[in-house]
Image (cartoon, rainbow, N blue to C red; front, top):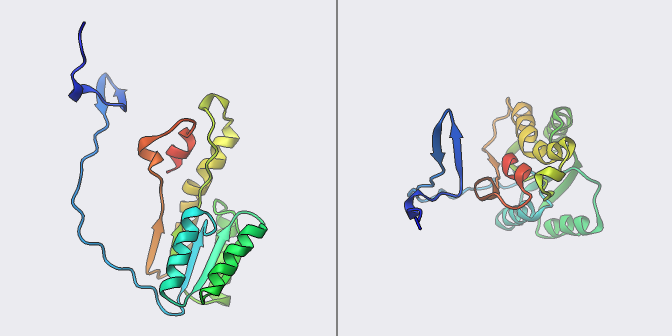
Length: 193
């Protein structure tokens, strides 16, 4: 019996033009991260701000500084989401919600223009929006695959185009470890991230 040498095993392998490629992740040493200072009364827009990650970020911001938080999501508010918005308000910040399809450039552009005229200059944007619908690839339709790709892919493009002339302090785009590790039924989610 022959055994495969451990160093040759790699769970992610690709062949292109008769060449074998294997995924390798190398550790890096990071410099000490800079502290992000939020501006008092600044305006911060969070796409996906009522999801798990987005809401934690929103809470973190309002606990550090009195700001104006704009939450953008794709659906009508549920009672639970209304409670989350109220939590942010109780922490001392102004809070607004916009129903926007992040993948729709025209909706994003309209919202950015409205925020600029009604609330004030946007200081920072956080893109934490995403959809995860686990299902084996064979059971996915093109439409369901696109629904998962749209918020990350087309959403990022829409934000970029809509804010080209903005002088943002930052734009943070969140991803998922699934883009590296994958997962059962997560082909579209991994690709989007």
